[in-house]
Image (cartoon, rainbow, N blue to C red):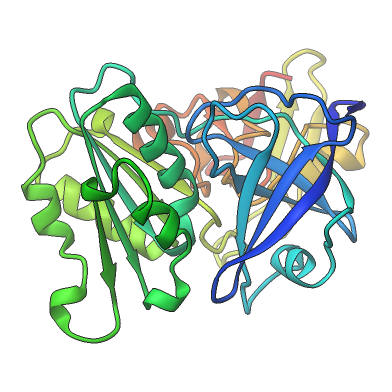
Length: 323
């Protein structure tokens, strides 16, 4: 099943989960079991055309025979969603990474509040299923543009936790829409919040939580795409120094640190190249960082001791890297 550091899987089934949302069921090509995963995990999927994208696993973590993912067709796709919707077919063999989890449930939380926006339901549904099996206290709120665009509605309706889930729709009467502030205000003390969806949705939820003085340790989120991390008008060139050798590498305007290092033969493992997945996370021994990722928390960014070199830059002339 393994090819290098990757796994080979077969697309056993394609499904239409909702308008513009395609589901894939992935199984080991030898018919065996797949590496275990926990709720909130994602995998890197190597798609036709050399594209690598991250997708959350949305099936029950107790299932060892398959992985399920769901992919939204994005009109602004850089190739990933188009490849899934237009090229990948049942029977195709794909390479994927082993599951990684940067969005884990807090095991000691007395109560869990799950908020999903659109395609962000994929890890949130997995969390709900796991919490239900554990008999944990939770509520799930799932918002979408319209009912036609909301995946897994029947699966939720048929679940053992259906009465713990509330659906919301942006279209139609205002009473159908999610009132983020009210949902947060009604949460039990010491509740942990988990949110996933489009960046605007996540920002709105986190802003509301912070305004209501939720502590950062109780806020958990996962982005599917980063904010625009392209060149900015104020960008300047800078240098990075490799602590192990003292070698200094110049990083030009419009060039990422990973690109600059690759040009001189220094490889850093990357995946999303948008500051979302954390694959390239690198320790910084000195220097001021211009953080442009969606992976590190605000507290982690403020510490200035690690960064994502795929997109983040320097606020000084030189960063010293633990490389």
